[in-house]
Length: 363
Image (cartoon, rainbow, N blue to C red):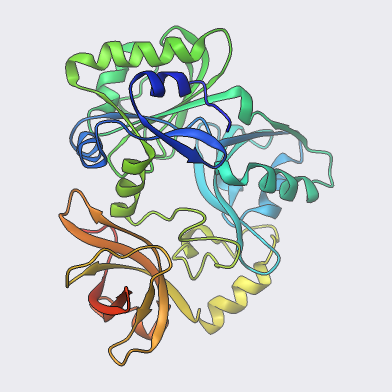
């Protein structure tokens, strides 16, 4: 298993560790429900250094990004970021990702999922026929996500950069906790506010940043948070997780990601024709949110049925939502069964358990 710059910190703090995407990662410290509540009500620190980062440079960098992603990166100016996806030639998704514009038309950073680093790199490289300078800096980059309503207030004294007024999907670069060349963004995966801190993993930077955050946050009760609570937090918001809710077989239009699939952008991109046809004809299935009406926890791959017992789809993610005190899930169902308040049944150990389709975020 690979380590992040913070692996020894997690172990020393008594975190429950497990393998995730080839990395030795903390799943929980004080317990998922406690950590979840800390982020929703205050602030928590996630080690997400396992994520992948690619730097693309040169006069054709934007052209390459436009050809391999679904969103319109030409709209990005320096200091702005964008959620996007990498489609494959069959109309499925290689990955979902973030695109950061460091220097307009010249320098971009792509942030990809940990389990897809090699796959994404190879896919983008395969389309790089105009000599774009590409650097995989994943192993040299540390990344902490400090999330929660009090996160920015706690961190502001550690930098001269204005992070209190950082707009959603923008970023700033500068000094943080005495470390130079730190990128601080507000792209959040929890719906609770906060920032992500990217830094070069050298010269003890990880130690300096981690210690500074927990020293300044001690009085406010800032906590380290594991991947378990990261999953429950994102699920309450209805955010997709690659490998669960989206994958090589799901189209962005089926997954409710039509808003990042810009068919009218100025350049062609992989699978554009497939998506255009799908938009015209309508997708056959749809990713929906649902809450359990009867008692039971929905789990990944459980079948979803209609009232007559016909299989109409499957669960992609599910949990007992800590903030809502009810069981919720995401899953693909036929379009006919996707309307809000539609009654569906989750097959839990051969027992049809009633649920209903609801909107995001869950409430």
